[in-house]
Length: 168
Image 1: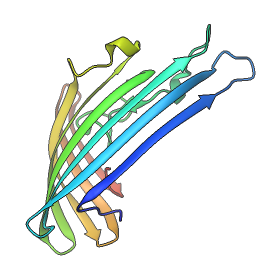
Image 2: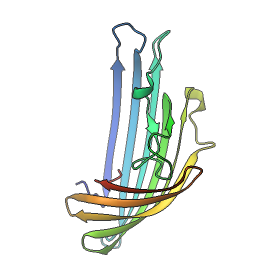
Image 3: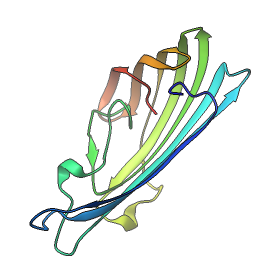
Protein backbone atom coordinates (compact mmCIF):
# COMPACT_ATOMS: atom_id res chain seq x y z
CA UNK A 1 0.00 0.00 0.00
CA UNK A 2 1.04 3.60 -0.48
CA UNK A 3 1.00 4.21 3.28
CA UNK A 4 3.40 1.36 4.07
CA UNK A 5 3.94 0.49 7.71
CA UNK A 6 6.06 -2.64 7.24
CA UNK A 7 7.79 -4.54 4.46
CA UNK A 8 9.82 -3.30 1.55
CA UNK A 9 9.75 -1.96 -2.00
CA UNK A 10 12.70 -2.63 -4.28
CA UNK A 11 13.37 -1.43 -7.82
CA UNK A 12 16.24 -2.11 -10.21
CA UNK A 13 15.99 -0.41 -13.60
CA UNK A 14 18.38 -0.57 -16.53
CA UNK A 15 17.89 1.89 -19.40
CA UNK A 16 19.50 2.23 -22.81
CA UNK A 17 18.92 5.74 -24.20
CA UNK A 18 19.81 6.29 -27.84
CA UNK A 19 19.99 9.59 -29.66
CA UNK A 20 19.67 9.75 -33.46
CA UNK A 21 22.99 11.56 -33.72
CA UNK A 22 24.64 9.55 -30.90
CA UNK A 23 25.55 12.78 -29.06
CA UNK A 24 23.32 11.81 -26.12
CA UNK A 25 23.50 8.01 -26.15
CA UNK A 26 24.01 6.43 -22.73
CA UNK A 27 23.10 3.57 -20.43
CA UNK A 28 21.74 4.07 -16.94
CA UNK A 29 21.30 1.84 -13.93
CA UNK A 30 18.96 2.92 -11.10
CA UNK A 31 18.58 1.12 -7.77
CA UNK A 32 15.85 2.22 -5.34
CA UNK A 33 15.50 0.27 -2.08
CA UNK A 34 12.88 1.13 0.56
CA UNK A 35 12.32 -0.67 3.83
CA UNK A 36 9.64 -0.06 6.46
CA UNK A 37 9.67 -1.40 10.03
CA UNK A 38 6.70 -0.94 12.33
CA UNK A 39 7.02 -0.47 16.05
CA UNK A 40 4.23 -0.59 18.67
CA UNK A 41 1.32 -2.02 16.66
CA UNK A 42 2.14 -0.06 13.50
CA UNK A 43 1.63 3.31 15.21
CA UNK A 44 5.31 4.11 14.76
CA UNK A 45 7.27 3.43 11.58
CA UNK A 46 10.93 3.63 10.68
CA UNK A 47 11.23 4.17 6.92
CA UNK A 48 14.62 3.91 5.18
CA UNK A 49 15.48 4.55 1.54
CA UNK A 50 18.68 4.05 -0.45
CA UNK A 51 18.77 5.31 -4.04
CA UNK A 52 21.67 5.19 -6.49
CA UNK A 53 21.87 6.08 -10.17
CA UNK A 54 24.81 5.77 -12.51
CA UNK A 55 25.09 6.63 -16.20
CA UNK A 56 27.55 5.36 -18.78
CA UNK A 57 27.68 7.52 -21.94
CA UNK A 58 28.79 6.01 -25.23
CA UNK A 59 32.21 7.00 -26.56
CA UNK A 60 32.15 10.72 -27.38
CA UNK A 61 28.60 11.13 -26.04
CA UNK A 62 27.27 12.69 -22.85
CA UNK A 63 24.16 12.61 -20.69
CA UNK A 64 21.94 15.65 -21.36
CA UNK A 65 21.38 17.77 -18.25
CA UNK A 66 17.60 17.28 -18.34
CA UNK A 67 18.03 13.47 -18.09
CA UNK A 68 20.60 13.55 -15.28
CA UNK A 69 19.41 12.49 -11.83
CA UNK A 70 18.85 15.46 -9.54
CA UNK A 71 18.75 15.91 -5.78
CA UNK A 72 17.01 18.60 -3.79
CA UNK A 73 13.41 19.45 -3.23
CA UNK A 74 10.28 17.87 -1.84
CA UNK A 75 11.21 14.22 -2.44
CA UNK A 76 15.01 13.98 -2.06
CA UNK A 77 17.15 16.48 -0.10
CA UNK A 78 14.29 18.39 1.54
CA UNK A 79 16.53 21.09 3.02
CA UNK A 80 17.52 22.28 -0.47
CA UNK A 81 15.56 23.87 -3.30
CA UNK A 82 14.21 21.70 -6.14
CA UNK A 83 16.85 20.29 -8.53
CA UNK A 84 19.68 21.88 -6.52
CA UNK A 85 22.22 19.19 -7.46
CA UNK A 86 22.42 17.47 -10.83
CA UNK A 87 24.95 15.06 -12.31
CA UNK A 88 25.30 11.80 -14.24
CA UNK A 89 25.80 9.81 -11.01
CA UNK A 90 23.83 10.20 -7.78
CA UNK A 91 23.40 8.55 -4.39
CA UNK A 92 20.77 9.31 -1.76
CA UNK A 93 19.85 7.96 1.67
CA UNK A 94 16.72 8.97 3.54
CA UNK A 95 15.47 8.00 6.97
CA UNK A 96 12.10 8.91 8.47
CA UNK A 97 10.64 8.17 11.86
CA UNK A 98 6.84 8.49 11.67
CA UNK A 99 4.36 8.24 14.49
CA UNK A 100 0.60 8.40 14.60
CA UNK A 101 -0.80 11.44 16.37
CA UNK A 102 -4.36 10.28 15.73
CA UNK A 103 -6.09 8.35 12.99
CA UNK A 104 -5.41 10.15 9.72
CA UNK A 105 -2.48 12.27 10.95
CA UNK A 106 1.15 11.20 11.38
CA UNK A 107 4.13 13.31 12.42
CA UNK A 108 7.59 12.63 11.04
CA UNK A 109 11.24 13.44 11.73
CA UNK A 110 13.58 12.96 8.78
CA UNK A 111 17.21 13.01 7.75
CA UNK A 112 18.32 13.05 4.08
CA UNK A 113 21.88 12.77 2.75
CA UNK A 114 23.18 12.46 -0.78
CA UNK A 115 25.38 13.77 -3.54
CA UNK A 116 25.85 13.83 -7.28
CA UNK A 117 29.14 13.21 -9.05
CA UNK A 118 30.61 13.78 -12.47
CA UNK A 119 32.71 10.61 -12.21
CA UNK A 120 31.48 7.23 -11.00
CA UNK A 121 34.64 6.90 -8.88
CA UNK A 122 33.48 9.91 -6.81
CA UNK A 123 30.18 8.24 -5.91
CA UNK A 124 30.77 7.31 -2.28
CA UNK A 125 29.48 8.21 1.17
CA UNK A 126 32.08 10.92 1.87
CA UNK A 127 31.19 14.63 1.92
CA UNK A 128 27.44 14.13 1.47
CA UNK A 129 25.06 17.05 1.40
CA UNK A 130 22.51 16.59 4.15
CA UNK A 131 19.29 18.01 5.49
CA UNK A 132 16.90 17.28 8.33
CA UNK A 133 13.47 18.37 9.40
CA UNK A 134 9.98 17.44 10.46
CA UNK A 135 6.62 17.08 8.85
CA UNK A 136 3.02 15.93 9.01
CA UNK A 137 1.28 13.31 6.86
CA UNK A 138 -2.46 13.42 6.32
CA UNK A 139 -3.38 9.89 5.32
CA UNK A 140 -5.78 6.98 5.02
CA UNK A 141 -5.00 3.27 5.24
CA UNK A 142 -4.49 3.27 1.45
CA UNK A 143 -2.11 6.19 1.12
CA UNK A 144 -0.92 9.64 2.06
CA UNK A 145 -3.28 12.34 0.81
CA UNK A 146 -0.83 15.17 1.37
CA UNK A 147 2.10 16.06 3.55
CA UNK A 148 3.80 19.14 4.89
CA UNK A 149 7.57 19.03 5.38
CA UNK A 150 9.92 21.66 6.80
CA UNK A 151 13.54 21.09 5.75
CA UNK A 152 16.59 22.62 7.43
CA UNK A 153 20.35 22.31 7.64
CA UNK A 154 21.44 23.48 4.21
CA UNK A 155 23.14 26.62 2.99
CA UNK A 156 20.03 27.13 0.81
CA UNK A 157 18.04 28.17 3.88
CA UNK A 158 14.78 26.75 5.21
CA UNK A 159 12.22 25.11 2.94
CA UNK A 160 8.54 24.35 3.43
CA UNK A 161 6.91 21.83 1.11
CA UNK A 162 3.21 21.07 0.81
CA UNK A 163 2.91 18.03 -1.45
CA UNK A 164 0.19 15.61 -2.50
CA UNK A 165 1.48 12.07 -1.99
CA UNK A 166 4.16 10.40 0.07
CA UNK A 167 7.90 11.13 -0.01
CA UNK A 168 9.01 7.57 -0.71
